[in-house]
Amino acid sequence: MKKICYILLLLMIGIHSTYAQQTADELLKQGDSFYEQKKYKEAVDCYKQAAQQGNVEAQFNLGYALYNGEGVDKDYASAAMWFKRAARQNFAKAQYNLAYCYMNGRGVPTDYDKALRYLTDAANNGNQNAQLTMAECYEKGVLTIQDQRLSQLWKDKAAGKYSGVIESPELEEIAQANPTPITTESREEDLDPNSEIVIDLGEPEVAQNTPAKPTTPAQPTQQASQASSTRVVRATPPEVKILYPEDQSFFHTETIKLKYQLLAQGLENETKITVMVDGQKQPTDRAVRAANTIDVDLPNRDCTVTIYAQNENGNSEPTSIRLIRESLPTQLPRLFAICLGVGDYNDPQLPKLKYTTKDAQDFANALMTKKGLPYQEVQVKVLTDQECTRDDFFEAMEWLKQEASPNDICVFFYAGHGFRDEKDRFYFMNYGSSTSKLYNCFSSNDFRTACEDINSKFIVLVDACYSGALMGGDRSAATSHFVEQLRRTKNGMVMYASSASDTKSKENEEWKNGAFTKALCEAFNGAARTPEDEGLSTQQLDQYLYKEVRKLTDYKQTPIFMNPNGMEPFYIFTYE
Image 1: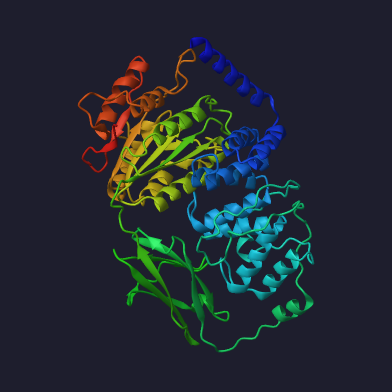
Image 2: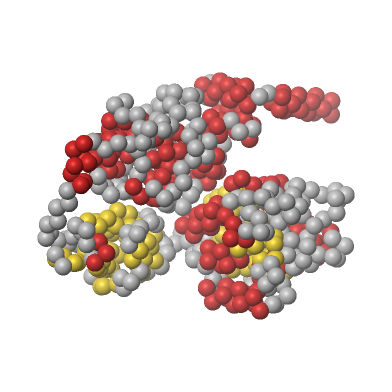
């Protein structure tokens, strides 16, 4: 029996070595072969290895598999991450699918501006479905303002009658990525044909050999130019309509950002926007005219939001949208987590960290085993190095805010370098950050702002040098003020930090995690359990981390625990 197991082990090692020796193109081809044979699990294994080597089509195919649950558990967050990696290489179909994700809040926060940006990129990179969708958006005023000239221009581009780049007016200030020619073919981007959205991004055709992004700027027609140069102002009332709430029609938060389109014959700045919720007027001093958005307070029930515009030419017709408040789940809560690992910085003064990617993945793996203990659903977003820019931090936190309800639990885990400035303020050193340009970093103030609206119990775990400064490890004036801000603005939070000082470990340590992450993973894998325990509570985790981290570091490193609102201990998960 031992001999048979040994032979099987050798065969498995041989198979793994064979995969490891293959190039990304060979792995992609092999994955496609498995996919055609409907051997989806084997296809995913090949795509994953090719994707990790940077193959753009494999990244797209892996995202597609994760989105649809082919050969792997369905995971919108990971699917969006792989679409984003391919989109950053200007792969048109990935840009199209990423627009779909942002449109519908699948794995990323709902963000119609980003949806428009990626849809525009996909269309300019030759994706015909994106071009036709852009035409429909401008025709109907969805995602953007109505503009029949631009609608026709996108139709001409889809028909091959126009080869120039078409820029959306709303995106003029957003930096566009340099175009990269894409000549590969891959799976249809038919993500979800049953999704109920105004502009259907779910039934695209297969894009053939997508051309490089043209460089000729869009030129308006002579007739359009003449029309735009002659301005006719009529004394007509303004028009307003709701485009979308930036959350969705289902909501669980106390406020939403409502996006609207205003046509006021050049009197936009003089036009007053009135908002009513179930017939009651709301404050209108929170309108952002540049983006045509307004914050609206919502009651704890289903409601109807109505807006109308008023200026010297009269009142517009009112426009309304019905919003449905999500009821709290009656079954088990859900667990949402982001696991961030950053060991690569744009700062020669900082040491490069070796194991942060492994730290993030190890802890994510520990979390994924908790489904049903007691979570009906576990979603973990893992972001490492290049996926951990400052903007990615904000987006990940926004994802938690959008997904979680009061019945759920959210987890924030960070493994990487931390920096403490002369005023004792803590900074996460995200990818591309530098101690000489701290505005590029994700600061403790950014963190406070991002987490205060997360509508659930929130567990924060930080394995970084000086991370105790995030929560006031030495109670200086600056950090004490930060703790007090958290106490006032974020209920239901507990925080664990690896140390108030340097947490660098010895090079000859046999473990490949930071001491804090090693002890944390052990606790989540059952090491903190005693016979009488029903589960791992926040208090038990604190006691276990304190004991184990000090033991691992010869009592030189002491983790810090903070409960800013004095919550009663609760079970993070239950044991089987």
